[in-house]
Length: 197
Image 1 (spheres, helix red, strand yellow):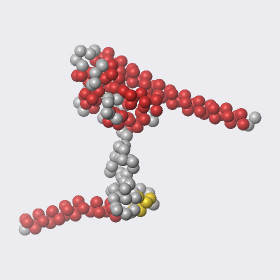
Image 2 (cartoon, rainbow, N blue to C red; image 1 turned 60 degrees about the vertical axis):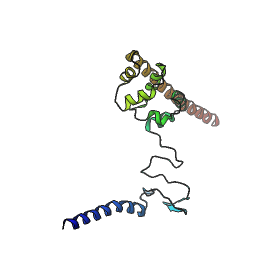
Image 3 (cartoon, helix red, strand yellow; image 1 turned 90 degrees about the vertical axis):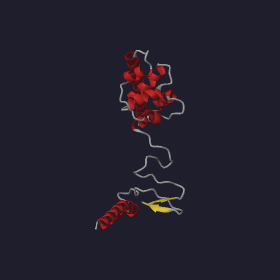
Image 4 (cartoon, rainbow, N blue to C red; image 1 turned 180 degrees about the vertical axis):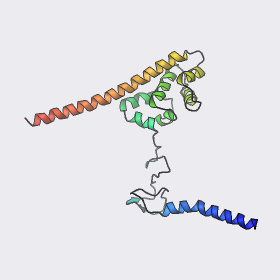
């Protein structure tokens, strides 16, 4: 009797494990979205009104890559990337071989991330990775992380300096973006008023 219950339990578990995958691969697209499983086939496949070639991949809700295969940017990297001037400055400060997405991963906000970058440069050491680990995995403040990395540094002064530099970077990027959009709208209004005269 115990053996039959065991077999029945294993069969039920197997059915429950397989049924969601089968349902997702055979379910109609909802609200214009493709199924949540990747489409892989040797022939073109028709999915939600889009034809997919055999060599392309379809981005699904379960993956974090885009159609081109590049990783999706985390919110901090995406925010910085939306400001070209800030993006250029921050990218130049990154440790060699590290992307903006990798460097900003785990930080609470862009200010904290940019301050850590400035701190590593101000300390004159190749210590950003250690600062990142201390701040994102060990949940240390910037001052604590600076003290951990460089015992001889005045951590409070260095943290304040790095945070001020980070705030200045963000303000400049925001001010530049605002003034650029204001200049464009002013030019547009001027050209429109000139055409009506």
